[in-house]
Amino acid sequence: MSSAIWLQAARPKTLVAGIVPVAVGSALALRDGAFLPIAAGMALLGALLIQIGTNLTNDYFDFVRGADTADRLGPPRVTQQGLLSPKAVKAGALLCFALAIAVGLYLVAVGGWPILVIGIASVLAGYAYTGGPFPLGYHGLGDVFVLVFFGLVAVGGTYFLQAQALTATALMAAIPVGTLGVALLAVNNVRDAATDARAGKKTLVVRFGTGFGRAEWVAMVALAFATPIALWVTGAAGDAVLLPLLALPLVVAPFRLVRNRSGVVLNTALAATARLQLVFGLLFAVGLAR
Image (cartoon, rainbow, N blue to C red; front, side):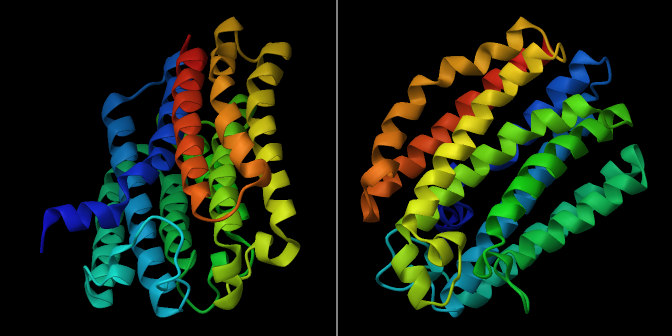
C-alpha cells in the first residue's frame, strides 16, 4: 500500500493539535528552569502517535457507523474512499496506540506514576472518541474531550513531566490550547450537522443547532485571546506573553465564514482555524518562555 495513502489517513494538517500543547508546556518548563529536551521530544512523539491513532480510529468508526458516506462534506477519508480497508485502518490505529504506550514507558520512568495515569487515560480517550460502547463524539462529549485532553492534560502533563510539579500558570496556559481545539471541532460539526444527524451522531451542534456551533467558535476563540491578557494582568507572565495578540488578524477570515456559511465552504474555515491555532500556539510558547 502506498505510503502517500497512509499519510493521507494520518491527516497531517490536524497534527497541530498534538504539537502546540507540548510546545506550550515545554516553554513553561524552560522558563522555570526545568526543560528536559529528550523528555519533551518523546512527549511530542507520544502526542503525535495518539493524535494519529485517534484520527485513524475516527476514520474507521465513522465509516462503519455510517457517518462517513458519499455525502461527506469534509476532506476525503481513506476508508470512505475505499483506499484502505476498514480492517487495515483499525489495525493502523491500534499500532499507533501501541507505539504511544511504548513511548510512554520512557515517559513514566522520567515523570512517575502520574504520567502513567495520563498516558493510559489519553490512549483510552483517543479510542473512545468514536469507538467502544459509548463513543464520546456521538454523545455530545467531543468538545469536552478536546478541551480536557488536548488542553489541560496535554499542556499540564508536558509541564509536569519536566518540572515534577503542576502550577496554576501551567493550567491557565492550557486554556487557549484547548479552546482553539474546540473551535476546530465546532467548525467541523457545523459543516457536518446534517450528515451527523442522519447517522445518529449527536454532537452539540446536532443537539442545539448550527447557531450554537457558530457561537461556540466565537466564544472559544475569544477565550483563547483573553488568556494571555489575563496572565499578563495577574503578573503570572511578562509582557512577551501578549505575543499571541499578533495572531488576531487571522481570526477575520474564518469568522466571516463561520458566522453565516454552511457546507463544504467551511473546509476553508477549518483550515484557517488550524492555521490560527498553530500561529497563536507558537507565539504563546515563545511568549511564555521569555
